[in-house]
Image (cartoon, rainbow, N blue to C red; front, side):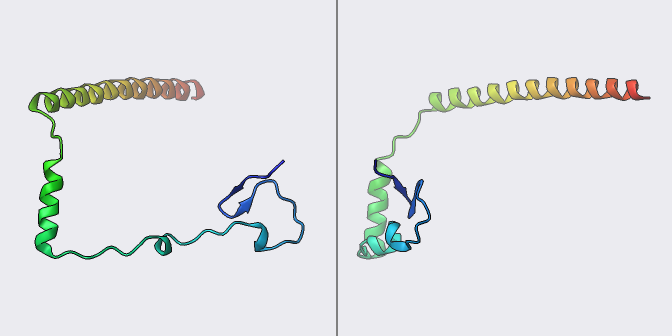
Length: 100
C-alpha cells in the first residue's frame, strides 16, 4: 500500500534514518511564475476600462432587498444575544444570592 505524501512529509513513515530523499520537494511559487510584460499607463487604463465594462452591477431593487435582509438578520442577532445576556445575568444573580 502506497503512503500518501503532503507538503514534503510522508504520512505514517517510520524513522528509518533516511533524509530529504524520502520527502517531496516544493518549489517556491516565484520560480514557477513566468515574468509578465509591463505595459504603459495608457494601455493599463484601457485594460482597466475594458474589465470594468464586464462587471455586472446589481440593480437598486437587488441592493435594497439585500440591505433589508442584512438589517433583519442583525436585528434577529441583537434580540438573540440580548435574551441570552439577560438569561445569563439572571442566572448569575440567582447563584450569587444562593451563596450569600
